[in-house]
Length: 227
Length: 227
DNA sequence: CGGGGTCTTGAATATCGTCAATCGGCGTGG
DNA sequence: CCACGCCGATTGACGATATTCAAGACCCCG
Image (cartoon, rainbow over all chains, first blue to last red; front, side, top):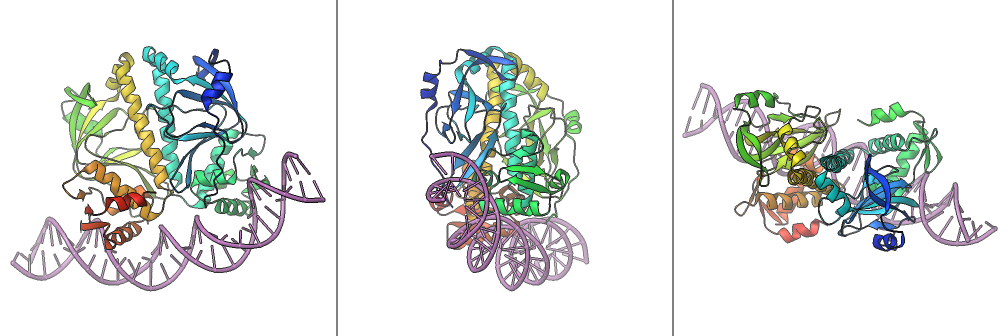
């Protein structure tokens, strides 16, 4: 265990400074308009770190993001994957309680926290949106915890179904993340993830076109596994 | 596994109807005043169930509450324990996503969801409170997920430290919940919980005065275990 | 064609779960 | 007051699932 890659963190402020700074109007929370700027993060680039000031909120335009926490000994828990359309990084406290990195090259819309907050103060509609976004994250987190008490096969099944629903590709699911990311999300090791996928493949529940390209041959069987 | 006790659910509406209905003014969210009525729940009584309408929000006055989700085969995940002072049951959606039961005889302050919402619509201060309560739950849930990737000993250590901090008794911790509740919270079996406690006791990290009455002899050692 | 990272596979081990028996506290009733 | 019975907790022996350690395969990119 513990062969985690640490990458050069490129602070957001640097990027923001270079990018024309928040003059673009774009939809951030559903159809509510707040200021924002699009920024591109390279593969494995840090978007924000645990403990940093939560000065911005984010929305994935393209690519994908992993959010995670690390224990002192290096064990990592991936708390969520964010895909195009997903909003993340909203905090009610000053500091981020988790870290976020781009999984692959990722375009992200960034808005000042203070802008969003001041709008929310006068517009209860926006305040409600802000809150329901957090509540939705809470639900996801609770379901994630529910995942972590299941067997390896059940966790993988749930993961595949979730990804299939969110990535809705053309006949197959194209996973952006590595086995290590999946393992850390599911609370397993990469070996167990790999073995379980092989096993599902041998039972022709799924088909592995490539390691990250998967066909769900029998989704209902996955659903049964989903307990 | 699966010897879960199901108890007769006493719906809140019955209780509320009997109790004079929300004319009492009392602090619910910090120092914000909203309507509320105190209701007592017996040991193992259901406060609300997953899927039920989330028409009320709750605050523990005395006693203790477990919130949980169940899988189709009966495995139960306890998502949180609520102790005196804790607010719970806030939902942004119409329905509760989890269930809640009184662990022992528990007095609870109940407020109409609609009252709280309508206040929040006009008072951005209250809206902010509502949101930060949800955000705090989210943090707890994420830390809970972090627990579930640790070893049995680490989970128990973290649990004991958390309870000690929240229950702050006189030299010892008096746990309101059963081993089954603890096991379902930590994603372990009662046997493993019991064995681990015995183990910690043998190393004189803790002392078991009674099965639910525990002295933390060496909290710093527990902290080290906390990874 | 080569090399590095990612992924898969195998064998041995460890941790936790399962099954089962016993203990212990507590309330009830004889 | 003590005995009984019940429920929760503990303990033991065994087994299963996931981890660890190790080797090798695959694949993309230079």
